[in-house]
Length: 185
Ligand code: NI
Image 1 (cartoon, rainbow, N blue to C red):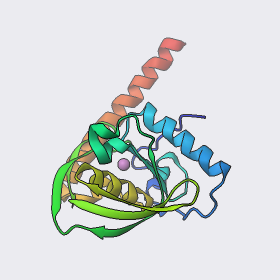
Image 2 (image 1 turned 90 degrees about the vertical axis):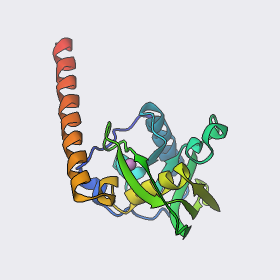
Image 3 (image 1 turned 120 degrees about the vertical axis):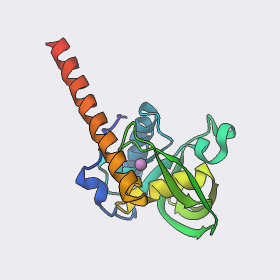
Image 4 (image 1 turned 30 degrees about the vertical axis):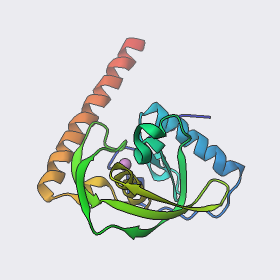
């Protein structure tokens, strides 16, 4: 098992349309385990394979996103080849973050609820419904599989502001890791 590197925006891989999964084997299960470790290490509630440089229509969701406190301690949802089967006409606006934009939070409009059909790690088909944060998290992660990121959903001004903050954060991260290298020398 391994913690994988999460690609920061604007890594071009984040703009790919991911490939459908058609083999549900031990190798796929191993990818899922690595992604679970990565999501836990980075304190995320969702992670798309695209974000760790894996070209598959696969994402993980912490059940906390769907069920709140009742979901704590439950296994992550493994969502493969997801299709949105229904979206509510009602919208919600709320704060969104992304492991590819660490430290950046923006207000994004999404449908208030959504129903999706997906495959699990063994290839079985199931449907789930997400409301509020659940709908937001599902749609955010499905976007990643289409090469879409959260800043694509906001106004030009909000996008510019978010990108400025992101660049500052990335610079600070880089100089922190340089300092750490120096301390090791
Ligand atoms: Ni994201």
